[in-house]
Image (cartoon, rainbow over all chains, first blue to last red; front, side, top):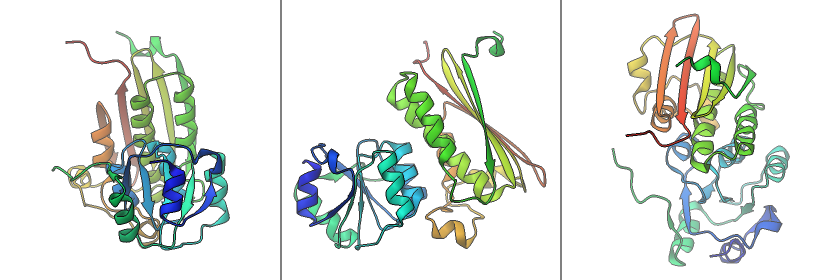
Length: 119
Length: 149
């Protein structure tokens, strides 16, 4: 699915990375716990989260995350938006809650970047 | 083999404890340095992850620290050396879920007790030493070429 289709599906605003909407995405990881994002999110996946501090963008950069999807209509601090633009990481913002966001994406073929955590 | 002889590049960065607005900047810089070396994506990504985890630890717990990056023909090495409270029980600190993070750190989405464990997972070689009331030293090595049989 193209990021542009993700934007339509989630009725999302594009906060950063308008020029990257033709990027293909296939997988996602959703969490508000950045410790878990660092441990489990995979390169090339979308990151679904309700956290909006600059560390979300730093982590997306470190992990090669394809795009950040901010859920629950959270407003992003200006410094987070600026950093996303500087590091060329697309950020979309949707009013849907995390569960709805994930469900809508899954129904259209986006799958988890991993299915379950093996101890 | 004398490891010091074949250093291709070395960079050091100071980290200020408690400065959360700057946290992660060193990892971003180190990642961009490694990317320019045309190293495999996986090596760049793993190096960036261990560096970021170490940087967040210094900002969260230490007074100050230094992160250094050493590039050799067959490996990337990241060292994190801090002046801080140290870790009284390293075995316990390495366990998933164990954390001494305060409320501020947790509000930012950290402090789930995954950091050191994650560093170990993503490193090929991981060394840790610590002295209470002095500081903690981490050394992470990531091979840039597959190990020979």
